[in-house]
Length: 126
Image (cartoon, rainbow, N blue to C red; front, top):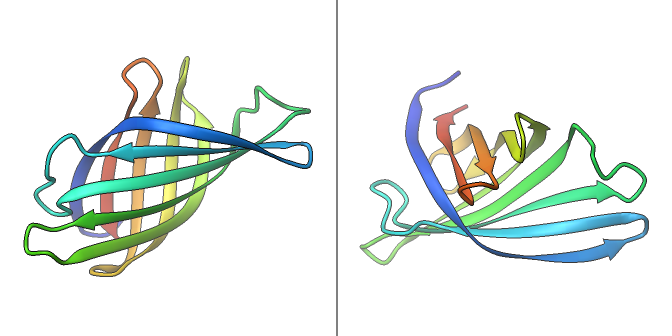
């Protein structure tokens, strides 16, 4: 694992679901409740695809697209892809790899919890 960039915690803002063949595609929207010390005001969408034939899958693929709006008026964009796996009742562990426009290649490990409607974790330089 590379050098730690920052911890994060985002709150669920809502989602949309759509059909793609025999799949349910879920876009979940997340945001910080206040400005983050590294990324500013953060807005992110995670995209999950679930098969109608296996609605209780233990794992799958996920992608993330997000942006941070910094106090100085600049913006950071992040794009990552990876996997999720169940990690308890209504909790999942997410591992992502990708790039952001400031730090380049990045890696993140995180958890989403339905009970608290939070997505929290850590971003590292890859």
